[in-house]
Length: 209
Image (cartoon, rainbow, N blue to C red; front, side, top):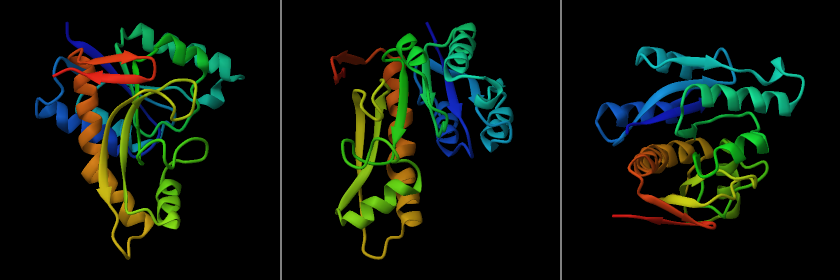
């Protein structure tokens, strides 16, 4: 059975584009992006979806009076679309525990560092790369992981290292991490899930050949 993928977005959608490109190249085996859900009606990611004939939905946090009512609406939306896998691609709205528990080990996020370094509360976007450069580490990278109720704390699926060079700015480093790591391992992790090649045991994953 082909698995249905929902991609949750809030902004430009560069990781969404990487997934669409991988899908168009036949690299997402046994899965297809069947819906793009945005928390922001003006997100360019919606245009990317429409350009590829992928159905879109907009669900804004501010249209709901509480996180629990938003959480319930988002859960119902995803279930109504018969979604097997949820991918977070720059989704800037907090997910409630109800949503997370409904889709246990079925939500994949990409984080722009090698977890457990430079992750958790407040580590997102350019801030991650700023902190990496401030600390003076020599390698960084990206991590594709399942989402649980702990911020960036779910089982790790794939990681890829990226070199840091003297003179790097946060912006330069962010672009390198995207191009060399995020856009490669996110589609790979999604494909592995759709091929039933990820076994989760506690907080450890085993990838089948």
